[in-house]
Image 1 (tube, rainbow, N blue to C red):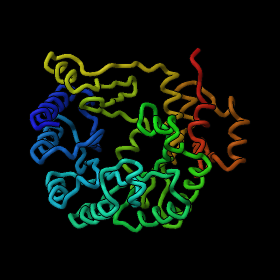
Image 2: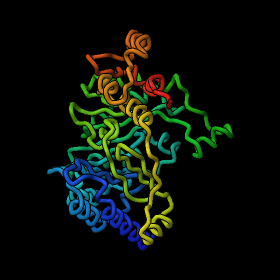
Image 3: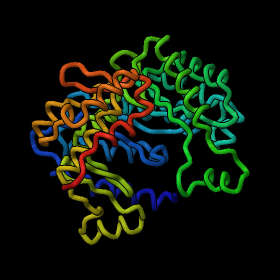
Image 4: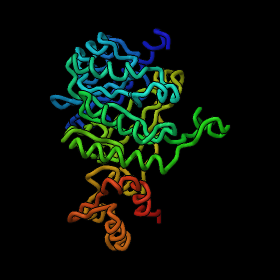
Length: 355
């Protein structure tokens, strides 16, 4: 990204922030700000400060909002971390993926294993107390013993949150093409399940919480930003490809930087919109709610949508509880550690259909 073009995009984002400030009602307070969706670490101090200043000027923030910055280990020099702290960023999300050099090269990551460890140490030295890292499991060459060492090593770092994702074959990715060409081995479900079990064992041994399918934290250190997704709260995304949700519809910005800037210049909407039906909203609440430890409230689903899950799916609920996949505490239906492996399946079984 050239410096000129980078300035143009930042200016466009600033303009969109101002134009969409009525997305939230005047009495709605914003608890989180998230710089992500690509490489926000290309931004300099002036650009980050400008965007934060506009947000504070045009949005009703809580007193101490969670301000997260997404970054890669090779972006985080000591100077850059000090700058982020000085402008008000108070949480880091670092895409570490692995502490093993060969696995990082296999994933085509640009950082080294040494940088993975060094950047977290630097972040703590600068004074960041809220640090989350991402790890990947299910890599074909990753042994169970290596994965256990990886998790243990992560939990010994000065972090309070961890996201761990199973390697998947995504459409239109180099990995999928290499698998199709039989140059790479595809992920093995049994291996991924074994890695997941090891992860849960180590998380429990460290007395951390497993509060969402792929997210773990020291007691009470939930990601406020991501928790909003799982609790079906409103969120506004700005910039190319950003997604927004207002509990009635979903919006997504155009992905092209050029078209995004042209639409802003013409004072036109940068996004497409999908109005959600009552059935869409019900099914989305089921899908997102069951991914988190809080689950869904069956009484609220019944009163809000006239959908009686207890009556319609009594046999399924009992079977899932008997399997140890789910639990029912009064009206609160939620999944266990083992049930999280089947979260999407269980949610889809409870989906309502359009009449």
